[in-house]
Length: 378
Length: 59
Image 1: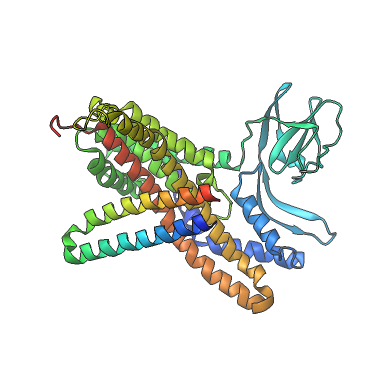
Image 2 (image 1 turned 135 degrees about the vertical axis):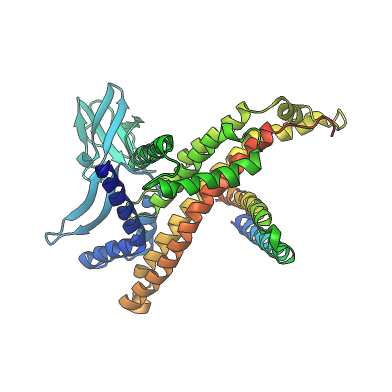
């Protein structure tokens, strides 16, 4: 028990320390880069490429890279496993075998098959080919994409956060069996859980039905919030800024409110009472499109766009250091970028909470619409 | 591109209206602050979703 408490304490301190150094850490990483590079990242296109690379998912963690005295690129980070479903079945190896190459020049040979990585996508070379050849539009001509089940950066983030949540919340739940007030990290979580239940679930779904959906809403809320916060650390997660992740969450909400819809809900959607019969089919089409497409689409796009935009803004402000170096001098540009990115990071901490809140709130609202008891007379 | 710009302008005006009216409402009835805030955030979120959706499709 004592050891567990110590671990939790250590984790908490580590998390707090990580958040307080967020912007400073990324600053110092970049500065390091700059000094050792002799200003390699100083053009607008390179900054843009760097930011777009960060926004996308990747097959490894790269914290920073620099050129050493011998003139070679050194990368700091750690590799993640690549798992492919190729023409010969399952193939697995570590992403370090690509040596950070992203234009298809490094060929990895496994079980008689050859693989190359081009723009973060892994291609399988056709039999007999020894190097990737490209046509004029830079599409590979003798290689095909494989089904990629790799533990990428985002998948790694999902798994780590999922396990952490399982650990924290199962511990919290177990504590209620023996005592009334939770101890340790549970004290941080309890008010948040109560907040989601009392401020989001109850008023939007209603006293009668809210208990059934509180579990889902709590999971979604903490999942999005913790991942948003993890995205602000210098580790470079951008999990909630991936369309696949937000799309999946939106589909979960869609399934929950579609499956739990009452008779009255479907009645109002498909055959609206109280309006002329001729208008009813038109209304049904509009309502169906709203419930099945527009609602989940708005959930998906809002989270994705907010988080991606936040990441782009923070990184652009950090990049001021390089783009304005000539006109403001090194100290001026660094100071400006430090101040701006520090305050925008503070705003991003707020946005991280707000987006989790809004996603949960709208999910609760949609569920509430689906399960409310319709009065017979309208 | 022009369409995306127009949408952002429209969303900006809309958000300003929502925020301003919510402030007025809170000033008139400070005891209803919580309800007004919740409603404001929901409508702002819906508007934002629309703006982002249009921006996303327009790009």
